[in-house]
Image (cartoon, rainbow, N blue to C red; front, side):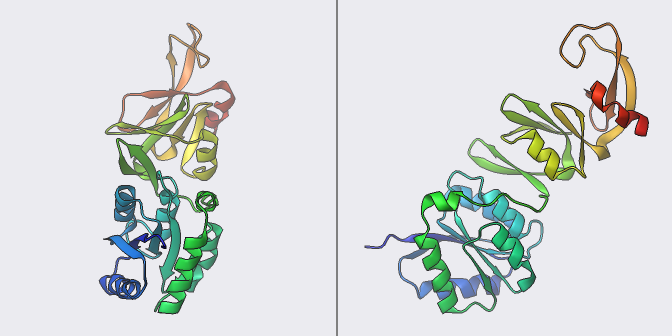
Length: 252
């Protein structure tokens, strides 16, 4: 007997969700686990229900479907993504992310059946081989105590590499992100600047630079010399500026 597929519907418009629900009701071995109105809701529900397939609208407020798909690939059991949209100008982005299929509204039953059969035929290893995201994200996706937290990029003061994690610092608190600092630098080069080999600082949060006595130099050795540090908004912390990055101070 064919195993039932668990499906999450994501669309900001109720009529579109209703339409998908009606179409899916005509198909065998389909179980709708939940419905979401935006990308953030979709991530929370996907983390809870672990759907096999997400039917994902693209143009939505707060977080669009392209970014939601990027974050969905980081949960414990990444689902297959089938994009649904009324606009065909997102097709290249969708397939760059190895989406299973891309359905244009109004969605016909036959096309939806074909897309779901394609998703059913994929092996788990193929679903995990999603292409890396190319568009710059607006949120960092943090996994914390079984929850998915979305931290707006504009709220982040700095990103600091510590062992295998990145400390994501906001004015309120710190979070841990399992990611490469080099990858983050490439993706967010317009937003963050590398002041030290282990730290990216948001340009918008840099108040200025100052020479200060520090007990230790940038390599962790005891020092009596003055070293450049960056002064930051919304925190008393400072970030050491490495020698190789001091040209940035002169540029300012």
